[in-house]
Length: 232
Image (cartoon, one colour):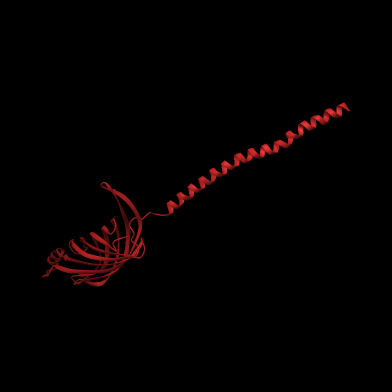
């Protein structure tokens, strides 16, 4: 009987310890899990914000649904004629910030100094070696690049665009369709002005001294644009 009493006393002493162990383990587990969940959620939120920032571009200069009117002048290099000047204007409607349609008109007066050499070779004389050239073009404008740069002490926005379209060349040596392609760069100033640089290649058929040639005439121009309405 004495042995049994001792055994019962030992079991009674051990039972509270056994009952308390799961409770303390559960508490410790909760104390470890809760902070971990909070930290993981905070990291997930930060990553979500970073992804959102990468997907969205902050455009301080909005072109969508605006009209752009431009005037430009520059240099015109012809395959068959001497290089000369070119002036013109353009109207652009921006359907989105990235895509627009543009209608351009330009005027130049080609200088055919090269004809003097051909006159000597062929024994013919051409009275007028200058030719008025009028160009009208319709182009699709795509602007895949938009960014900002430091100009002097201020930050300005810019974009780069690609051009493709067709046109008509009206001159004594050519009255036909032309294919037009080019690249351009615009500095955008708040909130309605831009300085633009355009380089375009004009491919068309030209005739000189009863011979036909496919020419690639290149123009490089500098222009100023105004966007309507004036506000974004």
